[in-house]
Length: 250
Image (tube, rainbow, N blue to C red; front, side, top):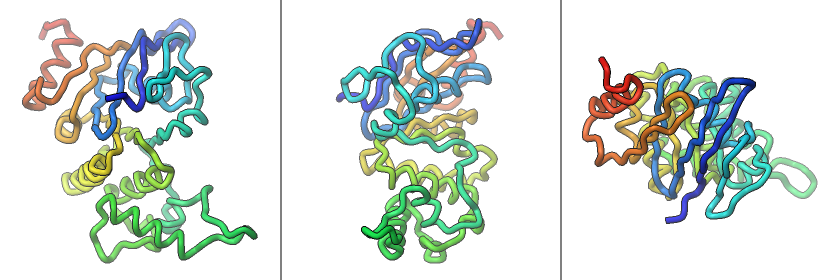
């Protein structure tokens, strides 16, 4: 299977600090990849490089088998890569439909917004990813939603933007177990439609539960690439991380 995106031997430096050091990874179609590592491991730099905020100093970005030169955010979006950062960039006082379409409204030839079409499309997307409550529809204010539901709106916006790969940055931070499960349901529904997710998290138990594969970063290096079959429990994954970082020392 040809990866949606591949980073090959990517290095990124900031002054005398090497944030990424010959890092290589790939994401295939229809999978959830968990990216984990301690603070300072290079996760933020890797994400920002992946989505075109940072241009690599060395190494290659390959999109569906084709090397891309002068990688930037425009090219990342053209490659159908969307990011949901921790703050989700939502406007709570506005409706779900407004948040999904803001800046990319459907318009008639004379510029008027296609209100009904937007509402219908927003309702279709939120049902597709797993909003089941009849109390929530396209016109519901985002400010009335729970944390997990707001994460779902941000994911819905990425789907409207036709994302093949959605990067979720710490999507379950500060969420309860019930709200975390809502996020998992959204992610699984996205995967079922053939889209991919790069799931970044500090909570190893959350990352383990939702991911098909794991990439472990340590001080800018990709030190492990593991399938779920390689580690049977979150505790085994934690042990791999600990042994990598400490060199096996307690």
